[in-house]
Image (cartoon, rainbow, N blue to C red):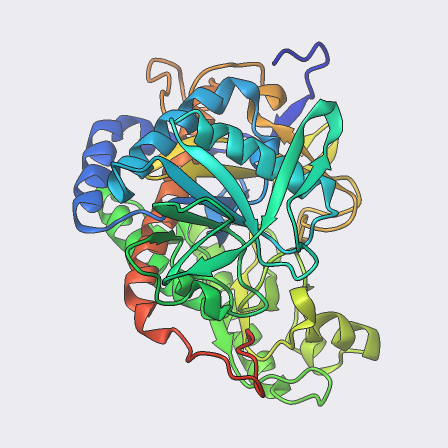
Length: 448
């Protein structure tokens, strides 16, 4: 897809960033072999997206989404990669598959999200699958066609269960793909399916999943990768701590929050001193479960979490689906030095199976370099438009000097994103036993 007006991407180029990129490029054969061996021991999630932060002195993931909802933000040039990766994923899951059921989020009025669903359906159908969309929403009681911008449309149908299998009327799929993060809990209709493959698994949803579990696994992956490249793993890894039993309304858990903020800041200050970073460190306090950029704040001093006003406590107390926040992760803040058209930006890398399939910049002109960009005012610029290239994130230009090629920067993004994907696979292996019991009529199984 051509774009006559190419957005201007600006990235601060610094010696630490150039050295990290050089190490990655020089080690490319060893890195790819290392990943290949890792995937012999671990099964990648069906898909995922990673929010990265490039601070010029480090490049690190700050969030890993197992139910990515922005396929519509990928450039047309990257779709062949996505189709090939989806073919690989389907071959691993259900080689004989003809039919696939896609279960989206419950809401049916968010046009941007529905455009993502349409793009995902297009990718999956290009692999040779018949794809239907089954909704968990009580509002969908019959097949409903939704018109989308550009003349596209989606038909959403009520989800039904027959003889231990889920589908829609007249459609019995081999595989079921969730694009619903289960923030509202695990519906019984999806439990204990009979000879159907469901991905991602139910315990990947926010009813079970915790970001702290993911970053605990990422700690180990980053340490292994650091040894492979002979680098300090901190250069690709944000420190974190966790507090549970927090109640922002009742002001419970404030001391745990303050102590954890102090702990992470102290560790980061030591690393800043070691690596000659002159900036003042900060942390991001956010809900340990949930997405949509809710329940997030930037903190620079422990006193700030002891003195939250009512508006701040209300903002932090609930996330998607109105669910109360009880567990909180305190994560090292990684500032971003990247800008698109003078607005603060961060790369988001998309993967299917074990492959990078593209990405985009999340851009927010209303936010600063030390703030959450997943907030009102954001927009998205595909990587291929932010920098004029139509190639692959998997093919660097090893002859170019560090910092001299957009391909090399995107390859570095992809390497770090795949580290987060590997951590997600380990995380899911370790948390499969945490699936909560079935709901009862009196007490729904909700997240939190």
